[in-house]
Length: 243
Image (cartoon, rainbow, N blue to C red; front, top):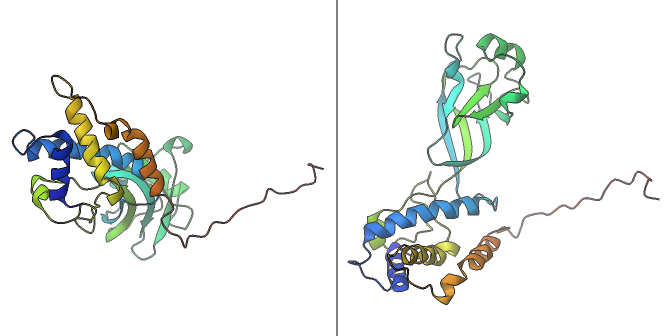
């Protein structure tokens, strides 16, 4: 539904108008609930909120250990894949590892001794909302770090509530909209939250009382959207011991 339809539905559910339930108040609740929805939708692992992003690489340095640190985007929810052009020419996929697995010091000389810019020998660790690269020497180059990640969908603004664009449409090439399957539930959850927050809480309707199972049903509906996807089964190895 469009932003205008969305605001109208919220006010229909809450029996309010633009004075008793302002656009600003709808937006405040909508964006908080949107982020809660996004965390659950992301668990379906269907990449609805997938974003490719590039960053410039800076040269690794003996004197500056933070030269290997790259802050994650503010809208980051989950990492899917990391690629890098560490030597300025060749691209490779970085593998994740955890710092606790690395039983050595993290000075530049030791990192260069233990890692390289060969496939399978360069890694990244996520620490303090940053991505740290463990590899051979890094050559500074433009757009040399490519991050495939799942982002929180874009916030909606007051102006969107009078707009005619569907809220499922991605606002930009690097931000996502909310899948259509969740628009009515989004409006319904706003209504539930608003009613429950009144000085004298307003009783919920029958549809609002079944919000949770309806939301779970919507989550199920977005799984496996590609009917051309191959499903490959496996048979346990027969070593003869079961006979």
